[in-house]
Length: 429
Image (cartoon, rainbow, N blue to C red):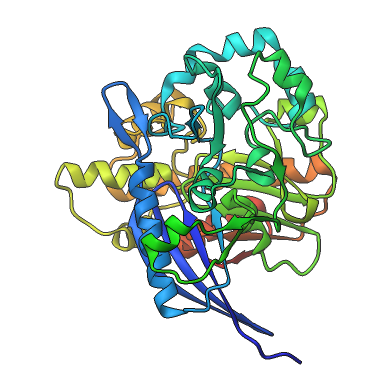
């Protein structure tokens, strides 16, 4: 058996942080080393929310430089990020402004306009996506002019800057609302009906294909003296997370729990029924031709925003301390709908939770521990997997919680209680 070791760099960008990881791979062994971690988040400008994509790119170059220093034989690079957001390139290939953040409310005014061209039912029949106000199709409708533009989703934009080649990786492209749920390629008839330019989107490439080698300029900037290959991976971070689920058979559900909670099952074919649309389930592409049949839940964003607001007002206390106190709060307390639109934008989540509980006629949480418990109870209820099982016809024996939320023992127990099934926590990465 070969004992040759290969090393790869993984660029992983989440909505609140990013990192570059070095992976050393040999038969029966995978060793991961974090090279650097850097902040990420929405940048509020007078006209809306943006991403600092140039700062992120510099952080990535720094990470690739250090990864190469640790492993001079670096063979390849893969990139995954959050979904739906993109950068626009002008005719010369240059970036036209910082990409918008999906939490920006600019799409509110255009959803009806899009659905006048193609109804919600027709959209679902074509793309299989649940209705989310920030889907790329709505973001495109909010752009003032897309003439002569090229749109690259965030991981594809970064790959373009590294290699000079423009592609649309399939798992992330499936979140745009413009990919056919059946063929896994762009839907030209839908694109035409929406009045979008024919050349707006580059060709679709499935995971596992070569994007290109690092350009000479990137090698000069990073000190990398060879030409590692950038390869498409499951560039939607949830697609990569689902690949990492340590399931023993197909009878499992997954909850990829981070800023968002993605609750669903892995299928071979999409579910495009009217019942599925009414339940707001989505059909996104996975690695190896699979379908990630799932529903988006707001996730730990609500908790992190709550903690951020408390810190702004000088209220101390660590998350582990608050979780310990929240575990002592009796069960059966108030809950709210974490998917309600008022929880999408940044702001004072504790105040919004109070208002939501009052509107439901529930008791209002009083202490910070009660607020945290209310958040976790509400997320656990939203993460129930009965609808995924019923609509897909898949028998579910176990629920796998992966991502950062798998470290939250209280949340995992509440999910197990809500789902009535054992929960396996991890991997975190």
